[in-house]
Length: 194
Image (cartoon, rainbow, N blue to C red; front, side):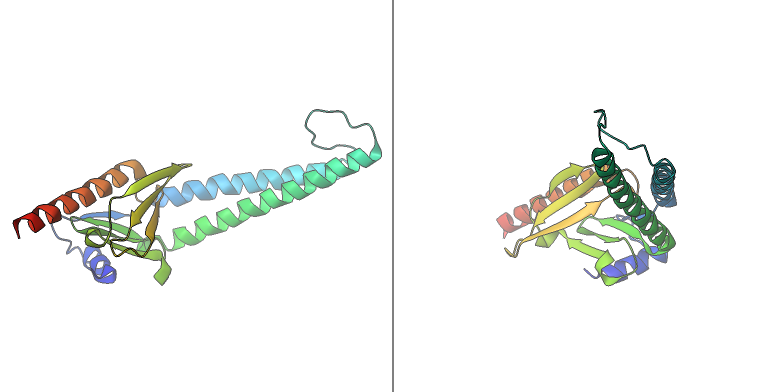
């Protein structure tokens, strides 16, 4: 299965009738930009307020009884706040980058597999043929679904992550697991008849 050809065919409106073409939802990236942008701005404001008040520190509720303890808590506050602010800025930048490449992103579900592009580089293209994988195992962490699919040739496991960029991931994952099971069952019954 040639993933680039499948995506080109889908973009040109020539998808087969049994394909389901899921374009990216720009709202997913807008939400991420807003959430991480607001979080970064809030953390920067908190750091500025902390810098303007040299006798204050964010603590765990215990009282600060010495200058050295205050100094230690303030240093910890600045380090943790700066790391979190930088992480939020980085997540915002990634959401902006993904938003800018939204027109190239797409998920195509087919009876024999699926093709997913989540960016513009070659690493962002995933082409999965159900004929080359075993049963799909699913794990969920913070709304992100990870599909773990053992290769039938014994060379490891393929991992594909699905977030909400193509819509709610749970029904998409259910479609993929159902289609893979159906494909495997039809292949097994065809082998029995041969």
